[in-house]
Length: 361
Image (tube, rainbow, N blue to C red; front, side, top):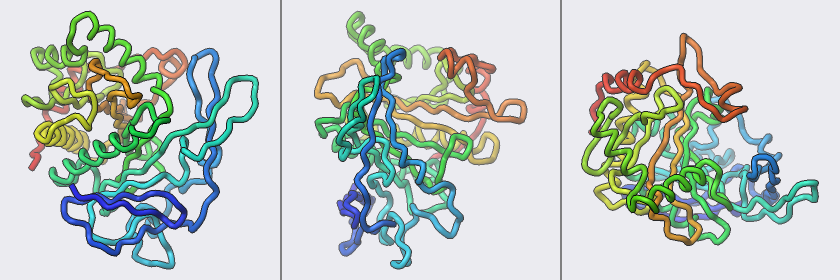
C-alpha cells in the first residue's frame, strides 16, 4: 500500500492511498478556502445512561446533489474545486466538513444535564474515483486495499488520546439515508465506547473470563458445524447469517482467528477477509439485480490503551430489505423497546443468498 498525506486549504487532512506509487505534485483541494472550526457537544441522557452528540451545523451539508456536481469526484475544474484532486490513486480519506465529533470542540453549554465537548474525529473514506462503482464491484485487490486503509486509520486515529473507539461504516442507498451517491464510507472516532459495542464487549469479556476463549470464536465454530446459515468459509475468514439475526439478510463477516481489530489481521487474513466481504456484497446486489441498501458497521477492540483479548473483529450488515413489495424499517418495538421482531427466518434468507452464484476474482 502506498500513501500520501496532504492538507487542504481549509486545514483539513487528506490521505491518498494506492496500489501503485502516488505521483508527486498532487494538491489537496477544498470546496471552501477557510471554515469556522466545528464545535459539537454531547449531552448526558440520564434515563439511558449514555451520551448524545449534537452538531446542528450538519443540516447545511450537501444532500443528493445533481450529477454534474459531485463533491466526492476528483477536481478537474480548478474554478469549481471538490474534495479530491485528479491524479493516479485508488482511494482517499479526508476529514468530514460537517463532523459530529471534532478535536476543535471546546465547551459544552450549561444545561440541566451534564455536557462536554464532543471531541473526536469524523472522516470520509472514498473507495474509488469511479462514481458508477460500488465497494462490492471493485476488483478484489482494490477491496484488499480498502481493508488496509481501514487498518491504517484504526491505528492512526486510535493513537489520539481522546479517542476510545474507531468505527468504520458504510451507509449505502437512499433507503438508509445516504446523501451522496459516490461510493464511500465513513469512520467515526469516538471519545467513548458506544453503547452497542460496549454491551457486546461486556458479554464477550464475561465469556472469555469463564471459558478462556472468545464468545464469537465459539459461535463461529457452531455456525460452521450447523452449516445452514453459512455463506463463505475458509480457514481464515467466514461470512454467515447469525442464528440470532435481527434483520432479514443480516450478515456477519469475520476472521476465523479472534483478531481484536482490522489492524491485527495478518496479510493472508486480510486477503480472505476482503474476499469474504466482496462475496457478500456481490450476493446482495445480485439477489434482486439492483443495488442492495444496507448499513455496514465494524465491531472491534476499543483504542483505550487496554488489552482486549475478548474482542473479535467482525463486520455486521444491517440491510433495509423488501418485505411484500415494500421496505421494512425499524418501528415501535425496535426503536422504543429495543426488542427486535423478525418477520423472516435466518435459515430461509441464508438459503436465498447461498443460491446466488458469484465468482470473486
